[in-house]
Length: 348
Image (cartoon, rainbow, N blue to C red; front, side, top):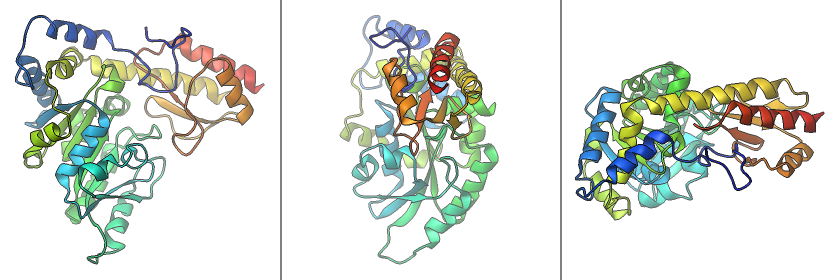
């Protein structure tokens, strides 16, 4: 059970949660004895093969320490410095990565486009490309989508295919920030391939940390040509782990028995329960559709401060304001009901 120092599980972020048992046990097994370094070990090979099996295609797989590195290096592999990346105005690569995509690509510019509930509209891809075509403007090269989005919504298969059609017509690549990809798959009830390479995604940054691992993302190249010399990018960026088995072994533990999807389904279910309970409280506004493992609430400053006073931690600066409540692999029904009960009392 992962708790803060006061013993209470929290809703600020799924990063608050500890390591799930499956990932922990796999790391313990990887810790028995010696193994080759820098990814030349059986755990890394097995994890990559399991990801290929999961997506049902011969993709190229790399393991890095975190999502910022995964996104930034993947985008850099798709762009030249004079290119641009088109994304939602609330995309993580725009709002929360401290300019890392621009840094690792030597200056590729991030351009934001309109869309509802954290998504980018297919028509906005046309707008971003056609607004200017002169040599003085950074040429669009990549569309970046977030799955699930920063506002807890999910792109459906048809939405992704619509974006793909627009991107393809302009010779653009598609990058997917999948920090909460597992939650999106659980929400849609689809296979992973249906919302990645079969919908035109060239590169997926598959998040493990928020799904119950200690650390690490997998960068999955469905277009293997884009992976050329990506290992050198990882090394130069400080993302080549000497003891790579401790990044890759948790993927083995999560994928072999289906824990990655089981934990995502649980987190989504807890968010749905929370949504049901708080929606019935007068004065509480649910701001966006609940589709993954988070909900966003409009709260008065008084209620917000009172919840903080009762020891609840949550962010109110993510997603254009409002309180973000995030459920994790270890969130319990008791946790959800305790928060909802306090919120009802303070809103009365």
